[in-house]
Image (tube, rainbow, N blue to C red; front, side):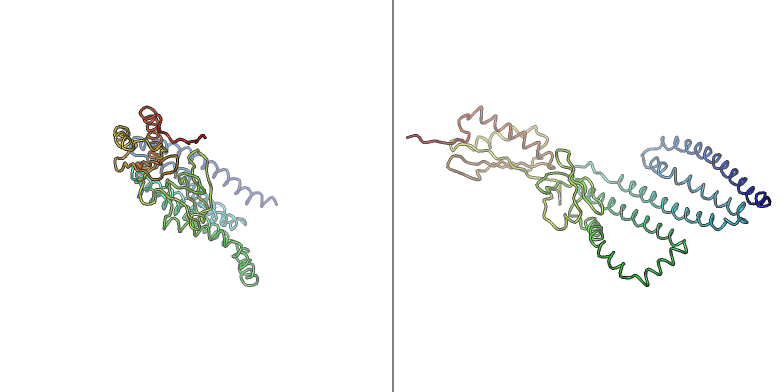
Length: 349
């Protein structure tokens, strides 16, 4: 017992203390070097370099620690009985370290591609299309990396491999049952991939879903988040957008035509609105100058319906434009033709 203590135990203690001491020294050296690099990066134009440095700050340190652990195991602990266990643990750490670094590379690539897109442009259809594909395929890639790394990690255990073989040979029926149970989930994931490719919706698209007006805020493999105009969020399964009809106001471009309806008496002169509208629209930045149209579209026993068509670069501007012009039209009629609003006539006997 004393020989074991003097040999294996002492070697483990010395190796552990030396290893921990070296980790602390490496940490402070790494921290100092990282500060110098960050200072140089902060002076460089653009944010990509700084983002990548922050992204790989922890994974790089973790990989250095893994290399040190591998060296210590082989040089100081090779003759110990626990050497094979430590080697197995280090192999698992390597698998998950590679997975972690791979995910960080995907984040860096997606950040680089997103920075090349001009989402703030007035006609940002192509940018939103690319952004939707980047985000969805980023989620797919991360999911695949995690699943593959877990599977490879489990395969390093002999017991798990033997259990897997026995399950495949003697309990195939359970695989069928699980397949049916997971059919809906798999279908949703496939629907998310289909949306990323065919793109019936894209990020920042203006849609009307379940009678609600909003913008597509987030698209994942399983659900879509619609930001409603009053700041509420409508969360819907991704399959909904492939199975049910909905309105997409920005499917091909962001341009939109809006309508204003005014109900007036038969005595109201429609040409007065046609003459007044150019002055109302002249300094209004929400009107894109493409279309302005005034028509009588419906009549009833008491009134006639006047429809005004106005165009804007996007739906938000068109909403503000219609609200503004509607208000000015009401004031215009009130000032110039106060008795010509729609009336209900009652015949007295």
